[in-house]
Image (cartoon, rainbow, N blue to C red; front, side):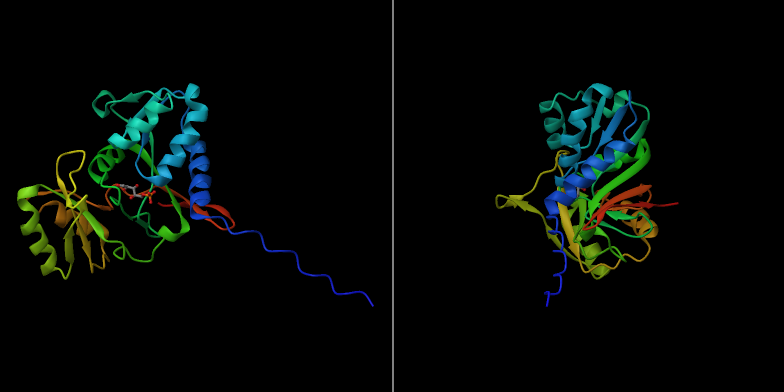
Length: 237
Ligand SMILES: O=C[C@H](O)[C@H](O)[C@H](O)COP(=O)(O)O
């Protein structure tokens, strides 16, 4: 009697790092040859920058959203332009801390949200690259980053408290973190952001708020989501 055939072994699950590398490579398909590409910030974008270096002779250069990304781009031989030198970018590639099914995002886990929103605003198309853990039904589980002028920090924290949010000033080495723009970051938990467009509009008007980490007016047009079964492309209207 022959033994029943054993089932084929399940493919080894990809690590989060491999999922990020996968979407970083997939984003190359959205880079317009001969043009300047908008580049975001973070561990997923770092994978994209590494992939971009393999086609660096086919692009003119990049506009970067942070000192960290600028340094990585330059180290890999990619020319970095000031955003003021470029009127419009064809595409902006960036990660997210959360993305919903409409392409609305929370960003700023790496404290780069202000420059990210600026570069996103000057780009025709926002391509978000993220591993599957970032996809959510409703924004708000990830602590919402808000860049705030230091003298307004306590006032902004009180305003979030009136919305049920619990705020914390982000620290680095025991001191308030200072962003690339010389400001502080307040991280807010306890929010349920059902209407990201209205929420972004309201908080952006509070005195002292430089940038709120909800990207609804600059939402993603496409999301390349790294999943166990490959890269899933989500298109948003
Ligand atoms: O300020 C940082 C950015 O918004 C990042 O794009 C975001 O935090 C996602 O970063 P990561 O790819 O490292 O998860």
